[in-house]
Length: 451
Image (cartoon, rainbow, N blue to C red; front, side, top):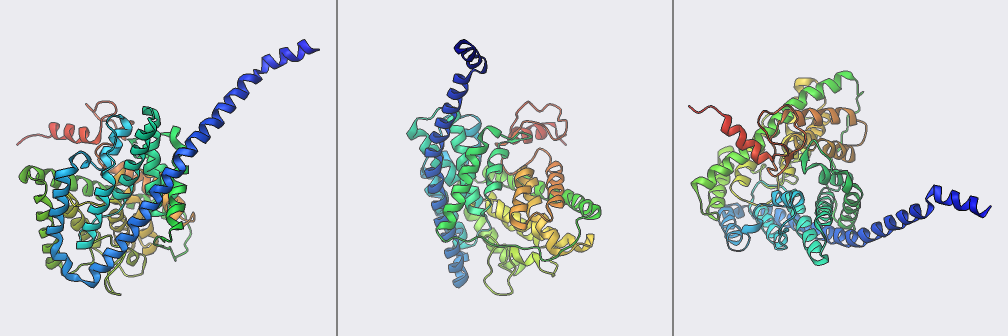
């Protein structure tokens, strides 16, 4: 009898099963002890950052003359980076590179430099976002924690992805999108499922911590209720082509103008001076300040904001003006991010396209809000989840269709040049396996006929 039970015990390999579950539980506890405090710290820094952005934006509204200090503010930040922060000028691309090939890590000084640089940009009126700052705060802190704990390369990669997820989830209040973004942004056509649970935990903790500090995120609602039928889905898909192409134009114009400025003005601190002067000139040329800053607040009640595109009024060219202001700001070296301006551009483009398609403006503004970002960042899954988190599941199908069409139409281009092409969207002759978008751009330039 005892021999029978012993044989059954051996056949079932109970000891190995118990050992595996024990090791799994120990690993979960190990990562929880690392991720939770790290994500809470990232959430706290993001809360301080969001509070600071709100404060300096309102200060700029109260003191319009601050705009004329934009060139000087850009020079000071540019000089600070030139003297102490050359190793972190890569920003988000540096973090993506370190996840792909862990090496020297992400210097901890990236956090205070990007925090200060972004606050200065918004204080004086540069058109920029906040995602870049949140991701870099998370990435630099995660890298510092990894070095302190002497984690191996795989552990460092997971921690860096957790830092991205925590920052993204905290700054936008969309933890699921933050987790998926951290998994998806690394490579086109491949999702790093191995880090799924750590990224979800980090995004949730970062988001909850930010909320616990009393930070509230903007609310954008689709007031119109309409049936989600085949016609609406088809319209969303066709509009997705426009969202993808405009996302491509944004990314390529930003890279091209930035590269040209680096060639023409080799001394880094002078580039923001020229960019600041150009932004001031654009304000006077178009006679409006509505395209400065994040675009989530306005100096006057009738000012244009992101929420304006969810109203009944149509704004045909606001998307193009915000694109122009943002490209000039970011390509000149001002700090911040691209995502919130991309939300503005996408919602404005959706608002402009709505009458053409016979769709309510708020429906197409919501779809454009996330779809244009999906094309520019090559993250259709994350943007689909973001659309559901922000606007509810009622329009999940047209949101998903627009995001995936925009992703396809933006090609092997994007705002993050260190992103890799794991699975090409379309056959790409001569593109090496796992090439970065930077290498893809160089490959296209080399194949371009010379006149």
